Image (cartoon, rainbow, N blue to C red; front, side):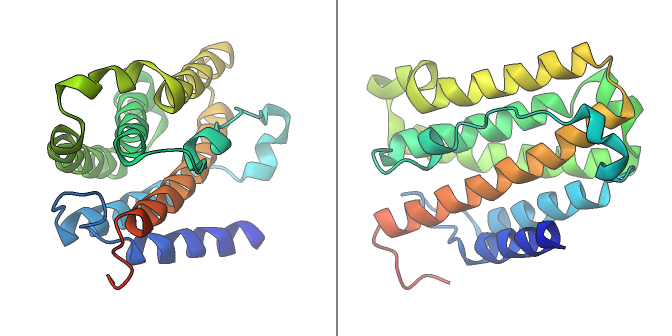
Length: 195
């Protein structure tokens, strides 16, 4: 029950994060697609997590680095982009196609691709060429390592249904952290009155 409440809270946070919060003009559609992606991840559930307790793992999500107060806007956008890109890559493998309902999986892939397109534009606006190294250091590198750990885990578990279920729940948690980061970006931009 507590997990369901935290998911609902994540949805509320996503709905309040402004499309203009990232220093560029993301459409309202970007926010709606993010909500839909989280909902799709919820609908993709095939097994009860209780059935998979033996497969639980702490993936060590770099929450402090992702939500840290020293994170500047270009870094925060780079982290958000990396999280979406890595999630897209994870669910765009042959092994993931065998694990999930293909209709839901295709909808998730399409939604993640839309969000990546929106953030690509934004990333170009706020980073410029001098900041292109941001993707290879600090918080963005921590996100890459986090997802590498997820890939290693899936391989070790031979891409079992339980392993995919554990990963699905983990990705939902990381999406919740990304909504917190988007909210902080909105505040950084001084966009306190945005819906």
